Image (cartoon, rainbow over the protein chains, first blue to last red):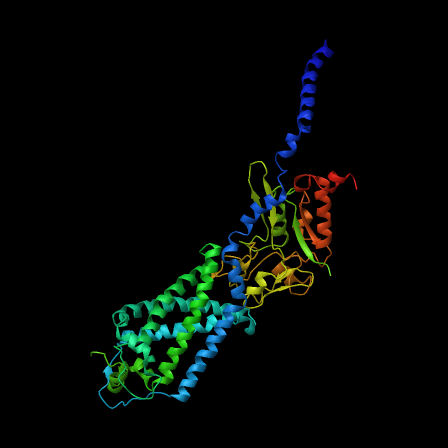
Length: 290
Length: 195
């Protein structure tokens, strides 16, 4: 009895086992899971682990690997070189300070300007420290430079926003700005002919728009680069943008320094006292209505 | 000189994440950093594949090219290492790396990034070999001990292999031919007999 009962169970199991062996031996099972060619799998895997590196990764790598610091080196050598030549060949302009001085900058304007000037100088210095970090040895010095860069950026953003509102009306492009650009602001001649410019000339306007709107773009891309807030491929584009725009800003910063410190005698004092000499305004800002 | 290399056999990797844990635990990796990760495609579907990825220790590594302070360097045996005392945490290496290998510890003041951390191939760092400083900053130096990296050593299915490129490639080639499936199902031996 017992043996017969056992056999009743064994038989179906045996049949199932044989069926399973036959099924496993069929070519069907060899083609199912796991036997996909590895090349296809790697193509699918590559898409995930290299992400969108193919978009801007290579471009960023090659430019950051040599182009950017060369551009900065060129800006830092060629721009001052040109102005040194200008200073030697054409020389500085000086104006009589005899007449009644004309009020040009209010106290808030001057305060904001010097806040922006200080923070922007720090931004340029610490930014260049990162760009040329390998020549300074890297490490804690450059790392603290990055922290200063962040704090200076916040100060600059606030003060530049204030200056933007104060100067916006005077900085709007005017038809005579084209004329100014054609004669290069009269800086190529030693004669003192009236220059077509209102409160600000076309050069100052370019610097204004570059520093405020460009500064805003720098702040936005810089924030993303600092906090990794954007997707990686966008970070690459932002790093490229941040570097090119920074090169332009450093160039114009040097121009601004030259103009205020050397090209026009006494120009620096106007941003301290708030007054320009009437002689200077009559020539350099001939269309300025008081 | 031997050229060190990782190779992950996707036919063997089972997404157990043992390599990730072994690396993180064995090297006391900082919070927010995973030196190794496992990627799975077609999860739950026929043909699911997994691969364990860390630093590829590239020849002509993009991270070395973009580093503004030259903190990253490559050893004679191809292992790419970072000097954490030179690194400024700018993150350019992260943007240049196709594999997302460079990682940054989080939790500093103002969300600042610390020095970059990445797979060292368990070869420590530029500090003195077996020094406490090396262990604290970079983890174990198993290469100097003559051992394979932690991840490859602990891999249960031996999907992840590490070591001299030629030896690893040879072992993998033998495996592929022995398997006789996938791309190599109809190779030389099937066409021309056992030779």
